Length: 74
Ligand code: SF4
Ligand code: SF4
Image (tube, rainbow, N blue to C red; front, top):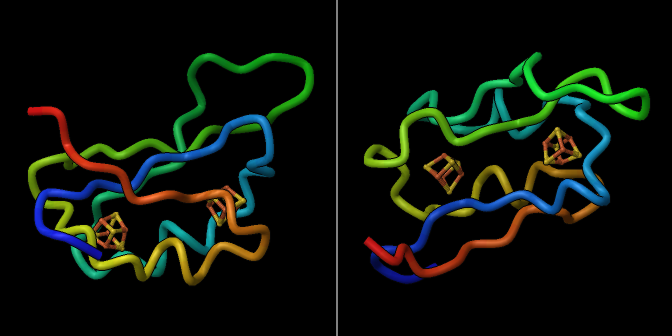
């Protein structure tokens, strides 16, 4: 974890199971039903980018390790 990092999702691996959503203490992540295709039921998205502290709790909660913390370009 470093200052300015934000959670990003590897959508090639993500199975939309949801532990990342409940792990975030700031409610930054939601499962979105938009942009679906026949392989997926939902996508996690960072709905509160500014509130994400880069704490990494979501990444630790993900059972398949498909969340990375990357430097926020903004
Ligand atoms: S916990 Fe991981 S696999 Fe599950 S929805 Fe979140 S990012 Fe996707
Ligand atoms: S890194 Fe922390 S603050 Fe950011 S989405 Fe994950 S759990 Fe929430």
